[in-house]
Length: 325
Length: 304
Image (spheres, rainbow over the protein chains, first blue to last red):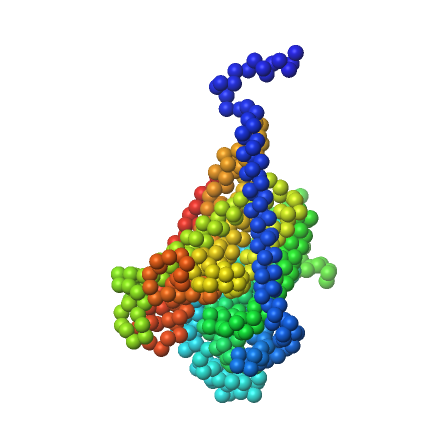
């Protein structure tokens, strides 16, 4: 009896109704296309790794692991090695991480711990986000014509008076590690700040109230309660910022001096893997291109590992709070 | 008969340390902990102000150095050769717009469709988890490697640098931003809205097209705008995919100029004219990037 009820319903004026055969066919093909697009991203990543790895194979066979520990880059003799570039990449990124990390976390605290009225905090947050919008080449240009002239007298004074310290072992004649690392620090600061802000925001408000209730000063609450609670999120921010710094190219190619040497001095010119690719690739012959592909593979491996570690830490950090809530 | 003094003040007074274990609830302004707190606060203020100095310095230089050179000729003329005066970067503006356009056409449809899969069709499948993770890894992918990849795949096989290769390289960099933003926007569409549509007999495709995509559109568009802003300012992948050209674009399969590469090339030249042009081109580039950033903010602010 009940089954007859729906047969008599007047369908002409209604928008609802079971899908037609055409709807089903459309549905199936659309879902197929969506699945294909998602799979395409997976395929793209695999293709990138295979393509760069494949193109690097001849150089890997030729130079072996010695490529990673040799300091020569000589197209005439066919000797290639990227130890100075690996050193320069890690050294400049580490310096940038120390500077950008300290400032980035300080700004995250400044924005989240009620130092500013909320409207002013929004304005300041926008300023930091705009920093992330400035293209790398523009920072490079600014570095050449503003930062280097500004740094040179300071660097040369440090070299003249404290030349014995290995960090100040050379004078700054133009491009060098210090201006490159400074610009790099400015560029990773928004990344570190915004992920740290998210980490600090995730802490339930009652945690801070409990700290204040115990009679802590604002900074005792920040240093002993807020920062330790957000520590894994901040760690993720630092690791991901480090990943950004490792792969940054244009500003470094313009500021670091492209000199294949290993030096502790902050004012000596150096080179990074990305800058090597940027400066050598456009004019490289087939032999050099193979070596550059090997260098690209090394950069790919380093950044993929650092980013995967950063994401894993971040996942761990969010999970911790989900469990607490 | 005296009434017991029950005011707050007296109860605090009664809490005065009677034993050594009881902490003092009074805090003098010149106590060491208070001074330390004030000192750190001052330090944070100084740090925050210092951190915004570079941005203002960059903007000042762009306006002063670039603004003075910005006129109709610089926006339309071709780049000058070494000792020439005058000239401009009209071809670089066209090249940047064309390549970012190609990148948008390639990455946005794929990105949104992939996001549909991640957010609606099968959010908990193994493929979805893998793709989500890879997209996040790709956001930290060095942009120069996208250039190396497209060089190996397209430039070598086509035997020429081209606007097409440059556009695809930028698309590789835009894709993860689009996917992650679109996924987040679609996942935020209220479940009741989808359920209502299913209840009316919609297929999943109809729900996606008629409910999820229109409702999530502001969030998706914000992501697309941010991706475009990022791609417009990115130069490393164009270095050896699009290369550079001193002439206006005639076909998509020849070397193409872009603002970012022009700045890179001119910044190291010893000629005053070229350096001024680099500043002017930087101003134009930053303006393009800012326009898309501001658009993203405006669209993102509309709540549904």
